[in-house]
Image (cartoon, rainbow, N blue to C red; front, side, top):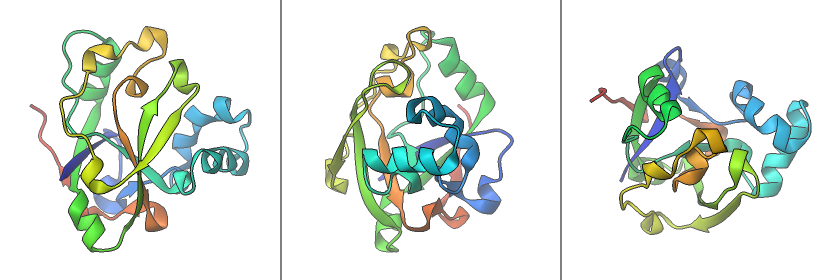
Length: 167
């Protein structure tokens, strides 16, 4: 099963791999407010309270963003990011995957998140509802179904990654 991840254009993904929150503290800025702290260890503790391994998780989608003219921030993500894909089955076969969590609920700006632990065959590959995204209301990726993969070591190595062409 092919999964997708967006990274800023200025990245080292093909050299260093996809990095989890624990391996890339820059990504922690978005969690500081929810954690009530700027302290890295306290943010990690907040993430780990959500589910075991979240600090080593990498967020992914089951399809590339399909911008439909509805939200300018989605368009910016598409225009200002690189899209990478990887095969989930390869991570499983090589023993890199610990768990999969699906974000099943999320309020504005990430409030009231709820996750469900699932098995690989439970990943829903039906089309995502991109029209639900509304950055003005604080609903972006929280508005669409996505998954967090808990990765042993917190990194998906570059050898598993494919840089996708923009369509």
